[in-house]
Image (cartoon, rainbow, N blue to C red; front, side, top):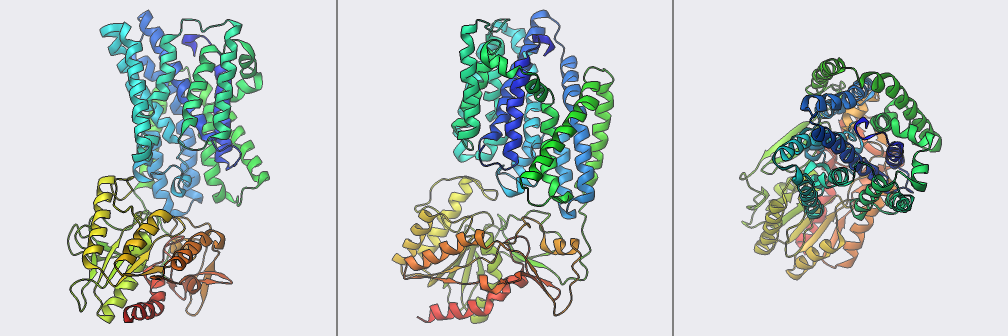
Length: 639
């Protein structure tokens, strides 16, 4: 801020940005838009960086080397230190199969492509997998660092060609980015959230302020009311607006008003308070520390985060940030020797993180029986299971009929008839049950075809429409897949369609009824397979590895149980029963009781593990439904 004169209210605004982010990540429901504080940071960054670059270009003192050296000294020392501590704690305390992914995420954070990494590997920012990464918050830092890499080049080039074009070019880029953002919200929500092109409009708003305002922002006290209104808009976005919608625009405009008119008046008085400015000055370190502390806390003995635990974590975050600010940030910010030292340290840390990223550390499971997850050799592959979940498990791959079997007839077995009597539809739960279904069909000589793919619901719009992409399929591929499923259902007119979805997560009522109505019209019976219990506090972790980590020794004749979420499961179980009760051609196969016991969900019987992760069964677990499944299939086909 030296280049534009120190403005304490901007540091105060940083406090109003970082505190809501921390409160939101603590899971406090009364601040549903707290994450928008990140967008406030984007506007501030755009304003400050552009102000500095423009001033130096006007004075003829701008240097790429000096600019990027300042950015390195400002960003990298604290980032390297926090990353080193996070990796070390993760290596010692975190579930071993998860450490490989943490190493990859650490590399992405250090090399400034964390936003791209999370977009490609995890996707949904609001999902469970994302919430378990101690480096998730680095996505916004990487996005800003990418901006710092390209924006000075663009500013310098425009200034050299036609300096008067700068304002128009920034305005054009800002509007173009906003159009991309609005257009991508529905079709490409994850890319829109994580990537720079759809976030430039927020940074660009700050850039526009920097090139549009006079050397001095308006100081007439009459203008202070606009800053007060801006602060009200920012605060409103935190408390009353949820997820990617108008809240971002409200916060961005509000931040712009504060920057433009906040040098006088009530807003200036509030944001310039000593305690508020203090939080703003350490906001970078607060942001760096708060998320790893929250994510790693359960691994360090914190269980459920009640009020006391939350207070402890917030206080701990503050003191870690305070120490980092005074002993890492301030000492390195203006020393020239900082650049080579911190670059060397960060590259060494990249090497260490690479060792974690390329090594899958496992617990000894040699006393357990083989764990098998059955899938099919087709493209695209069914089952979007995380690598750490697959740890210590045999992926048994059955050959597909063709490389594009999911578009040309599905996968399955031929029985007495050429056309299948049974079609299986499902997501990863369809994959999970498919081996038991195909096994029964083969033994009974029933022709069966399977259309089951992880992350893709059994239900789809009828007629199929171009919708959102998934981790498995682009929106065009998904449309083709839906069209193929509907076409084969109509062509083969099977006697029975078995549907196995993750009922509590995937099924949409409108799509469910549309498909069931089509099947009723052509006289096809439907069997819905109930989900098994969902394990508590397991998430995407491999259950066999988790048992080994807890020191469970498998013994013949001894069963092991884990807590399950009856409340969470009731949503899906209720849906299955409601659908079956709504149609006379629909029945459901109860499976929950096979695994749910008073002691918990059955996860280990002797040496055989039944669960893959929190809600997927291994082959051995899924096979438990075979007697019940066989009876129900034969009963339906006998009618």
